[in-house]
Structure formats: structure tokens, C-alpha cells
Image (tube, rainbow, N blue to C red):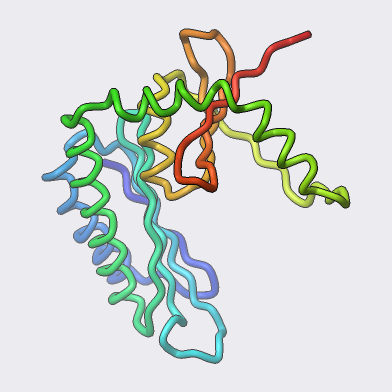
Length: 189
């Protein structure tokens, strides 16, 4: 397991690096396929001392990404809270792997029929065009719809982009306002 510790507005000492490595190393018992871990430590100059130090930990394990972030008044407490959050995500992740996955696939398949309506609603809601303020490039992993749904839930995002080998295209799975999920499958006219 490769552990990278980065600091922003804070000097990462050897003790901090060892502390993070030790804490993250304990997670390997629960998820042995951890390949790479990135810990970002940040000191924010805020008025509130309660959330001055932020720790964000990202774990890559066999194409799966787990991420957690916590802010407290102490950098070590932030690391502890973030590791606790990641360990609960690992328990949830492992529980989902063994649970019945058909529920999510069925809900996603049902929503495919309503994608046009959702896209039309979003276009109508946007009256003024915005500006592109950030571009991000990333690798798109081939995975099943159920796996993409798990990844989206584990990351805590509202959408997830993935390569669907069944349709041989890049798809987007997203969370709808009613709590269900939608799947965008592009087609070339």
C-alpha cells in the first residue's frame, strides 16, 4: 500500500506522516486490496476554531474509490475522524457487495425511460448560461451499472461517469430529486 501525505498551508512533519500511515494502515485489515492512499491535510484560516484543520483521505482499491473529509480544531483529531468515516464506508461497501444488487439495477433501468424528461426539465430550469470555470480530465473505468451506483454512493456525489461495456459507451448515472436514480446513455444522431 502506497501512502502519500500532502499538506496545504501546513507543514507535514515526519510525525504527522507516520501518524497518518499508521492510522490508514489499520484499514488494510478490512480492505486488503488497497493500492494507493492519498491524505491531504489543510489548515484553513477561518474564524471558527472548530473547523480549522481539515483532513481528506482518498483510497483506491481495485478500481473503487473511497473518500472522506473531516474538519476539527486539531489535525490529529481530523485524521482520526476521517479514518473512522472511511472505515464505516468500507463496512457499507463490503455489505453492499454481498447484498442483493438487483434493486439498484432495476431502479436505474426503470429511470432510463424518463431521461429525456429529466434533461428537458434541467434545460428549462437554466435560464442564463454559465461559464466553464474548471476542466477536469479523468480515466473512465469499465464497470456495470450497479458498480457505478455503488461508486457514486460511496463518493457521496450526485452523478458518476463510467464506461458501460454492454452499451460500449460512456454513461452517466445520477441521483434524481425524488430519491431514485437516472442513467444517461448517449446516442449519436
